[in-house]
Length: 356
Ligand code: TXA
Ligand code: MG
Image (spheres, rainbow, N blue to C red):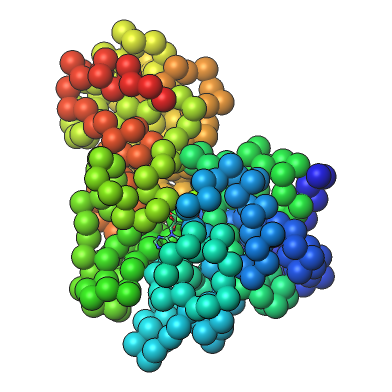
């Protein structure tokens, strides 16, 4: 198929342009669209054949369910069985980068929920996403619009690089706002459980919805155990090249310096670290500023994609503070590095020899 790219303003999208994409959703096609987190690849959540196309286009395993996107909490009853408590939480967190795991309503195709009794739902805080859902007149099921296993797309170019000719339309509204995906919380259990750290930090979420259990896996530590969300068991957020993650900011430069014995490294580091990396004569990819983790979140996936484009054999990433959005950043970096975090140059062979 020929992918049509439609440019729209991120804040005041032209309704006619978005309506063209909405028509494609109504006809059972698939549309990549911006959200405040990352680009999503959407289909009518109630059209099973259309949702199947998403899995095909991405190469996504069919046991990995999709997030259903609504234009407002009012539409919740279409996709979930609800009670007052759920409505109260939904009204507090939406629109925004929070996905709630809820009891699913009858009628949703099994492709969307992967046969689970629950459904993941959110109302995105992005004018283009909201207009698209509204004009389509149906909830939109959408995973991130990348090839399965790749870093999520934060620009239309990333989407096109991965999915050219596999999707009907790409709504191009420039860069997304946060750069990492939504925070996923299961509120069918008490206390709620964090399934994936995301753009909204748990420090910000707990005052709104109360205590949240944070399992070890949410940090992105080893996947040896049972996956907490179906999608968590797959290799994720990984560029084709290997990424080595170091345990401490202090030993980062020491490890980076020794890494030149193993090939051509690229330093994936902060602005603050750049002068020291330049002193070592090692090429760098600046991910953002340590003084503002939101810049790091926005730079994260583009940096991982950049690694594949430059003349380097592998990346060496520094760790970041895990407060707020930092937990999501470190979760993605741990996954991108295959969960191997090293604390001394002696461990470099172990981190670099692994299969990728
Ligand atoms: O920010 C986001 O969440 C983006 C934008 C497009 O909304 N979407 C996104 O979707 O990141 P995706 O498919 O890449 O990640 C959704 C995750 C997967 O790990 C999936 O397994 C999990 O949500 N999930 C979906 N339904 C679930 C359910 N019923 N129970 C537990 N986990 C679920
Ligand atoms: Mg994804």
